Length: 145
Image (cartoon, rainbow, N blue to C red; front, side, top):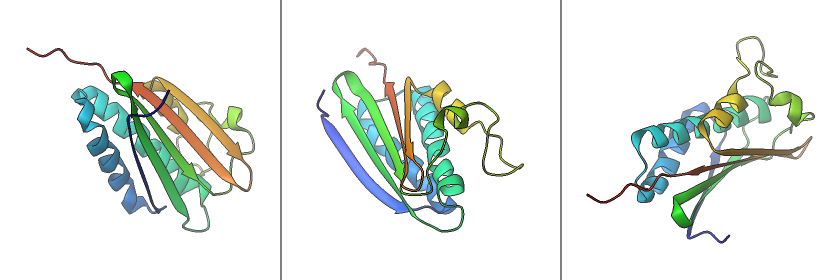
């Protein structure tokens, strides 16, 4: 399926940019008129994905985070969050609840939150080369009254 509209942007993996990522994605998907709950779900999932990049992908440096957000027919949204950081050696294990490489202060629930709030979640990673998280959600079309 071919995207009807796509936006791409990148920014340094700094915690101060997490809000920017949420806002930019929310502004782009606003054209589908999401409900407040749908918008909150997507913004939360984007926050988790971006935070994972900041905390886990670049633990000793500040790299770049790349986001592509695409809209398809019937307002299906696909969001890709990519880093070129250290990668994940065992994606299956990393996606388990309560597993974190970020130390005791991290809850290890990032992927679980993304799975909960989005319709689809796919994680691809290569150690030493980076990770791509692809999330999808269908925005409910509201009827005109």
